[in-house]
Image 1 (cartoon, rainbow, N blue to C red):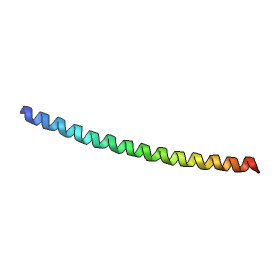
Image 2: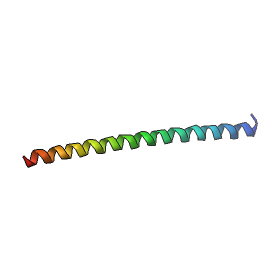
Image 3: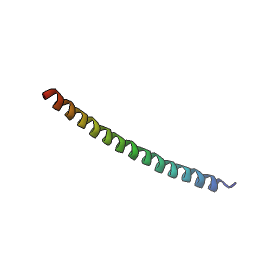
Image 4: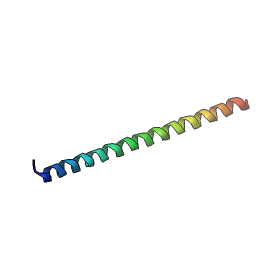
Amino acid sequence: MDITWVFVIILLVMFFGTISVIGALNRIATATEASAAHLEALARAADVRAGS
């Protein structure tokens, strides 16, 4: 195999790996935002119950 093909394969692996990592980070960010919203709603519900 020519060295050029090795470099092309390495470049493609790095490219698709980067896409995969970016997608995973986006899913983590979305899940974190959803968890924060749920925790905020629970905190408000606890405050309402404690106040009554």
